Length: 402
Image 1 (cartoon, rainbow, N blue to C red):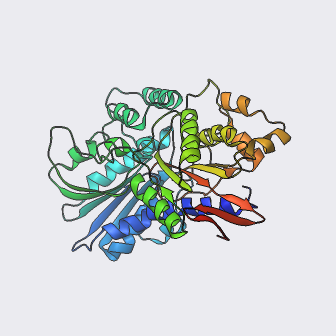
Image 2: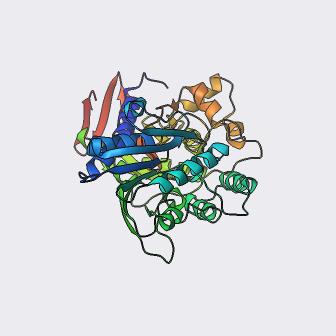
Image 3: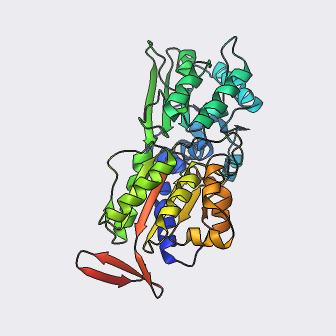
């Protein structure tokens, strides 16, 4: 990541402000009140470890047993200091045998749950792939084929999750059916457009269709919260901000055109967008993800626009099958790639945006963030002169160091 331009630091700080607003640990701790009896926790998803820590922050010794099912390398070190914790690192975005093993552990957790104990479920994005119990007669090959086809064709996450739930005993309200009339609580960090528990994680803790249950469901963090965190942080810097009117859900390359156009035409210095883009992958995709693809597409349009930069990144800290969150590009990105003799158009065709952004120094890497609410894109329109930031305000130019 290039760090010579202070405007890049501003964009990264704004992105971090959005992440802080939807922190899994903080969001869960704020949402939970004290418990009067024993609690068992089942946390599933990319943010499972952080959410479990938040539950322990709030409920302390009331928690007797904790099951954590999360993505590889997403286990916060503090989790290992808790008592009676069972941890499963599983596969994402495509399930494997570990997903079935994690499903068996969840079933065992449910079967051993005493009547005197309150179940607390903590669900975040990624649960669809990380844990599974297949319907009788459904093969693992069918599940793998659905996931691979869905990811390659760019199906919207809500539709893909609905298809996944039809193959599963625990998705689409399956856990609620297994609980029957037992009361329980479920807290969600939403990565889907509707913030609907019936869709988050393919409905692993959603209501069962046609049945009533006694599960209290609360969405404690969503993309709207993250967008607000970015906007508030930008306003505290004295920057004019354009807030989004809705979530984006279009092709990444088309969104790049839209975002750069809106940034150019808008009077605000900061434009914020939240949603989830799609990419139609070629038969043998190379290195990258939808946010890196969007950022690289935007870089072509920012060439010659010296006052404009754009960041596109996943709030979970990963993008596609890479360990990078996304990209942060500016007017010189394509020039840096030309010096490296990298063809931007060829990288776009081969879905190799990650290689290009690595060469230009424009990858955004955060590591696991402890949350997962979708993607953020942040546009910044500021001039830089002699190491200072020039803010084009309503009353003329305001030169300052931010």
